[in-house]
Length: 262
Image (cartoon, rainbow, N blue to C red):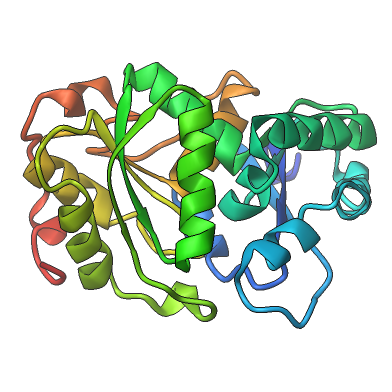
């Protein structure tokens, strides 16, 4: 294939991402993004509060969202995603919808939040019963359960870690152990791993093969939903939400994803 550098780089499409100040997994988001699409990230202002319902409210205030989206306008994203689960479920379904409306007004582009994307993904998978894994304290976890229930989805099981900081340091082994606990009993149609600061990309395929249900995560559904607004598909081999062929249980796994964390 001939390459010409005279015209500069190829055209790209952009997705704006508003993340909390302590978000540490930029690289994980990028792993779901196809060639030809760029992520443009901005962060909410720092506040000296640990992970809690209070923090969720602070990082999701409409004024904060509006300011963040306006910082992205110069690079002309085609959609905007708010990448925080707790910040987008803390106000319930009405609060989540109001957040999307505030972001759309600020940037004149389609908007999505992590918690809104969660409900889209569950609907797309036909899941009416979900098992939940969270790194949160009990109060934040209960708020997620209430949000899911408000949408008419039954919580079949739940496991949480009780963390208030440094969530991005949790290893895959602990995520997998919590998933097994939450899915115990085998009645869930899907399992959701909450928090955009919790690493999940590589753990998804093996958990799906083991649990024999779709496993979705906060960062995965956020990118998936934001790209849907562009008419573009997220990339994620052996992940049931993104690849219908992976919904035949158990899907085949590459050797490198079968070792190192079980």
